[in-house]
Length: 313
Ligand code: FO1
Image (cartoon, rainbow, N blue to C red; front, side):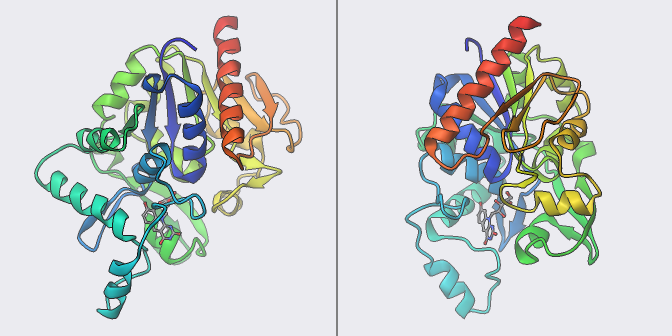
């Protein structure tokens, strides 16, 4: 695969494929554009969960059991915060906390999120580019049976229990693609991969940034999405529940339709029924990423699929 590869990713599933791509490509050729709709200010700190999951995953620092936060973590801050009557529903490990504290300080000093994340990725010896979707704030808000909730309130504090009726992205209208995201898309990448993230919670916030969808369409690369469903449900997290509550059938075809005309190819799991005509070529394979080898194998297959489509173009 000569030329750059751009991955669009959010959440835990997206980071798995981003790691597979990172390990099979020349590392410097990969740019991961990450969802920032989950970001929030908590305990006076700016928390960027999907950015941090991507940093930790590509940096070899991730807690692979939890899927978020760092491995080898200690929890003295959380214990003491609890003893002081503070809010402990969103768990911050001691090492993780240092990243939030330093990010908050540097953002307050006027640094852009893009520049800050690039510096931290360098300190983690990550040679791919990890870039926020935007340097302006976009926040996922979930309309539920209990009213509108901020994303982390819905996802963590309420454990995705409330019924979802709609999702919106506050601030999107005023946001622009981050400079490194726009640059990566304008640099004629060889492939663009929509990772198997939750389309509604993790990919839509990225596509909501004005101009990003057009940059993706115009980047000249085959756009390949990997279905986040395996066997008719989401591998992890609330994707299936949300799709049911939004009245969307839990099928690969529904996911493909959701990306409405962005796709040049779609990758579905071999456990799922034939999705029929999606209006683009379909590649059927194992998309369940349990091991590192699974992550690498899926990455290879997606890239080969993109090459076949690109040359066939
Ligand atoms: N998810 C949880 O379910 N519980 C937590 O306490 C929690 C803490 C946390 C801290 C840092 C971080 O980067 C992520 C964290 N997450 C937690 C996951 C996070 O809510 C999700 O990864 C994303 O927002 C959605 O993918």
